[in-house]
Length: 217
View 1 (cartoon, helix red, strand yellow):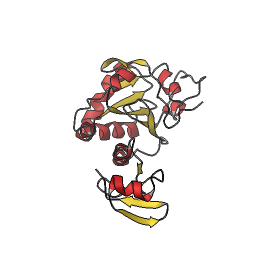
View 2 (cartoon, rainbow, N blue to C red):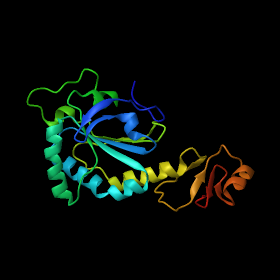
View 3 (cartoon, rainbow, N blue to C red):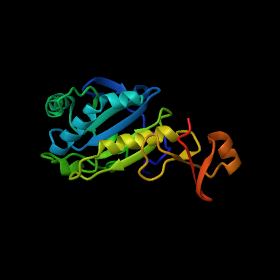
View 4 (cartoon, rainbow, N blue to C red):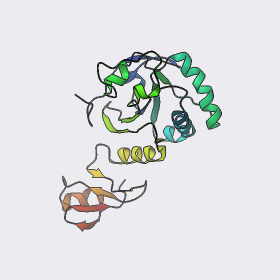
């Protein structure tokens, strides 16, 4: 069965270019983003890793750890980091998991259980290892998105989604379409008007089922 929203994500021990990690322990009390790639030294993935590296301060502001996955080995990861840093113009301090045995890719349902890497493989052999997973401190999956190899991921959108998740985490709130930090949020129908106003102040009621609050603290 596939990994679904609010499932506890798989725990695993893996080698990275920064040493051995135990995934749940590595997350600790932070939020985490795991982003996967079908092969090292590929053009789109190099730009994506570079974008993640350039956002290091933004991840830190949000108490969020980022970690890459690629189905190549540690030594290739270390060499590829040089290309990534050269392209991005900054250091790439996050770890990259060496998923040569495909254990992580299969655990996160990016590849079928019987998948293997053939000799002389190309990125197309692991093309579905192109996902982003946002994980909350309770180790539950909060969001996932999968991209084809031809479309680079928009990490501004990943940041926006992370902001929305953190804004509404464990609260009866949601964000509307195209929401940005600081904008009004939607109050869940679990609260009636009186309870919602007591908790969040005056409401902007657009429809009986669509009620906004002024970016409550």
